[in-house]
Length: 221
Picture 1 (cartoon, rainbow, N blue to C red):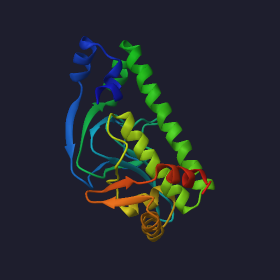
Picture 2 (picture 1 turned 180 degrees about the vertical axis):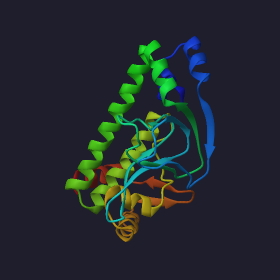
Picture 3 (picture 1 turned 60 degrees about the vertical axis):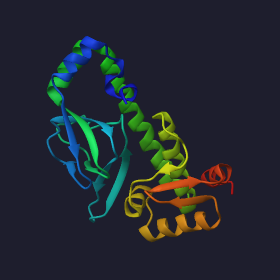
């Protein structure tokens, strides 16, 4: 995962300096790393597992803003408090960095600073993709797009693109895509019945017809 992480731009001596300030952590499913409004004094790099980021709306509803996989960074904030909450979807491992000490290290290593900026840019691109999902697409188009997105992210991490690992619950998917849990379950069943996908054990989804799934995602079907 080093090639995907903030460490990818560093040489051996720079990695040694970084190792001096990090703490390796293992968290269990459902564990909250931090909550919206908490003091943003730590940054995290996911090294395995899946995390979810979410915000609570004024009416009590939850909006999941993203799912983080190995190599993703979390906790970046322009203010002194976190703008969202982070919770483990599966068992996960993370590197934890004290924010102030990492910021001081970034001043010495511009390459790492550029890498961190690239990660922040990726977060912005992911947020824009989600806005498209929530704005113009119907339920089937959103689910198809979501599965293809997970498939593409797996490839970027050196894993197979099919079957797709979907560790998050139907409720989590619903809160990410702006749907109800019932609609998500019904749509998965429809895609299975039409044999576009197959539901496998262990939270995996096999894409039987990628072209058909892409057409659905594009609104062409």
